[in-house]
Length: 418
Image (cartoon, rainbow, N blue to C red):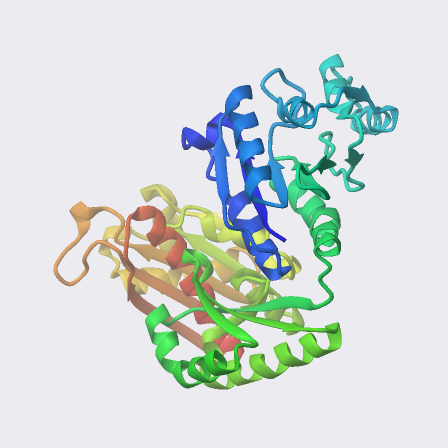
């Protein structure tokens, strides 16, 4: 079973939106045991979309179309599918009722053009999951060589697309392919070591797994989210897969130790906040260079947000003078960072204070403190530390890496590694 992906939208070609949907779907197809050899991006042009779909059906058994299911004139995915399959668009009353109810529940009037989204190619099956106004479609296509191929249409909104892919598309593909085995992955997130460094540490295990062929191990460099170590296992039953993943995770953890900070969808901030919450502690932050990025990550974490007391963004000389009780230019950076961490505990009534500052202006850089030098401070009862680090890249990367690095510093202390 081969399936390819067609991402629809002129904005993708212009670089106005980065196509993360296709990469995510490609990963899910691989995990589900479905071969995917092609991914295509095409603008909102009927002829080019239709050419892409017809080519996809020639060389693959299934095509996933992502995008172009909205209510406006340039949303023509459903129209093109009808053309390719030689069918008419018919009005689906159930879909129309769902769309009306979505608008009613939000206290809004529904524009008439939203009913375009209730037009479905004859013979298509609407996807059960419909978190937004755009319905997904499962469209059977008669194959010239006999048998049946299929087109799936899903919205371009990521959370809507993911719900449909996981809830309907992947199970349907596996059923069509006759797959009777289970493939799953576990992702161990790491911070504090390079990809090559991790590969060196895990070299013996990598060689052993390459000889066995199952499970497999791969590295995914993910910027501010750390370097991910992905373990993938395949077996006939869920229980067998779970045991393989548990066994391999234990081996990797024994080798990497506290470099691992989270598993699967958890991240650094949810790990730290959960750890604080379990101890009945709260954290407050004062930021200069990170400009609110740290507070935003903590406030929007997946879990443990009750442990976040709040944050202060101290960018100007006035607020810095107030927090430091004096002219900020007279403070050494490490002393200023620690004082801000202490202030965070006081003004935010938090058990733990965290602060970041850095050389963010090249004009302030020196031989001893080059651009990208950052100071990360943690203050709590019985423990205070300031760590000076040299961060790579532009200002945005410095902000991101400062944030994750200072949270990692706190994590290591909470776990007893510092």
